[in-house]
Length: 427
Image 1 (cartoon, rainbow, N blue to C red):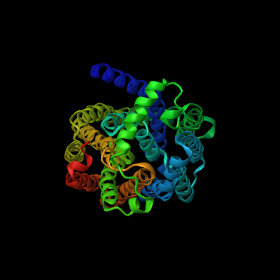
Image 2: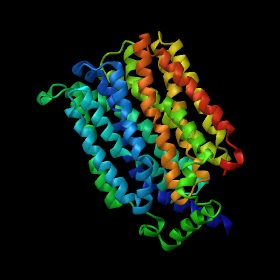
Image 3: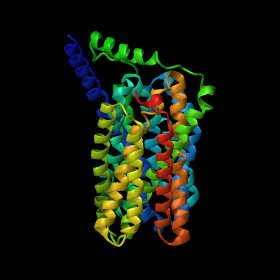
Image 4: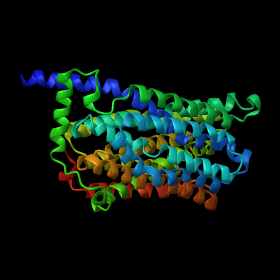
């Protein structure tokens, strides 16, 4: 009897996953592409507009200031009004602004547009993380979150060659530079997807008419059983909790590595002597492709063993080793790419597994605020990291010092991860 129940439960969750995840994954690919395509624009934009490395680093990073300021209120609004309308609104507004980057002509406009883009996108990622807690219990969320976050890696696999192709083929068409075409053509899909989200997404299990009554009851029972073990703390308590701030510091340190690589990978590859934008795009797809495979394998292991801390910390350590080796092997293109692949796979793998830590003890409105606060503080690294790498590159003439700094941040994050009590997160 129990076997039949288990088979039915697996089939129901498969049905939910096939309904929700393809749309959410495509949305995240487009979201992340819009976030990091500025790294490819840099290959043409800096010379065309006369930007220094510091100007680029500041502009790339100032996105996260707007993101930080509006993250918590955005996620609380999503919890109140529902994911369907709010996620759709976010995508439409940021798609319009991302396409509008083609009108940038000076550093001030660059800063303003990046800041507004951060405001527009605030709440998207933590909103999806919160949304998944409405559908999946914690012992299933590792793999599901990893599946969603393969969007980071897939955006690199797809976005690198696509960005390079657009910049090369469309450069000069109708008087517009390649980087301008890239912002336009990669921004518009977000607007279309926003409309699709509003039409297709269901806010909660109870509203999912594509499930049978028995399937809805089964899913709701599992979520209710897990929520009973948690305490929905007031927002003020969550935002001042040392436990939540520890999570924010851990995430900040991992994200330092992520955006250091994301924003500067095209530049690092160009520094190996590869000048063609399309070739740079194709080579940048290699590390991200490896990251997809590693992320899914490690997350499956974490869910099967119901162990979280070491599954987060060890990939971070390997990411740090990869960054260090990329500096030591910089003279050899093959070895340097192998090192960058190890670094990218390690760094990206830490992120979905990290979210199994705070969602193990946060619930309700407290979860909405806590997840958003952790994500917003963590993503300030998106401001800090590219700016520091740019500053160190301008100071030393190479990206080596920046890679050392990022490796140190990853090791620090791994140490903090292991310090989290296992009983709190291994569920």
